[in-house]
Image (cartoon, rainbow, N blue to C red):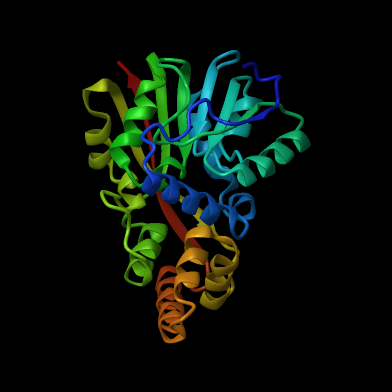
Length: 287
């Protein structure tokens, strides 16, 4: 499909296992990311993250690029602006709708297609570059998602990932929320592990070469107080919203989480409230 075809297409494959547990889990994930306003989070807090990933991968005009778990296109739109033929794939149609509207305002067209990062609906070796900007890290089965990234990338192509690190602010936020969250699905792994270079190297194995990995920071100067940060995420960020909803019958636990998030923000900010959120930027060549 060419970059001039702006579409929102259902995947060619659904849940091939037919497992109702898997189907229910995917439905919960779609609902979680559709809640709140993740496109606002991406645009207001981390707009430069996708561009940093695209700059590292350096897609060329005419190359086929897949953005996995693309959300509202934080990396897909810059890749299309660079001239690539881009497919933005995500499990959540509402995020793709927001991305398509943003792309139209930027005067760029690309394909928006519903797809599961753990079961991508594309043939082997069908893309010159495969990207994910703090997206694929949220697929619970890390090995399955990594296998798909590798499978759809052609030999000699590039895999590029931007992921929050375990020790950075977002990784610490997930660690803070974990005791209050419902248990993960069987075999599910914490998202910030994708920000651990050794973990990603293990996932990709000898199927890639020329790995380059660097830790960088996004500077956040939006929040005047810890409470302002906490409320922003309670209102807009799907994973945080889902945890607070699970605590609806235990308000004392919700209050404890309020305090824990406020304390994290307070100790992570400079005197003027500025935060620095660490992420791992990793690129590799498909062998």
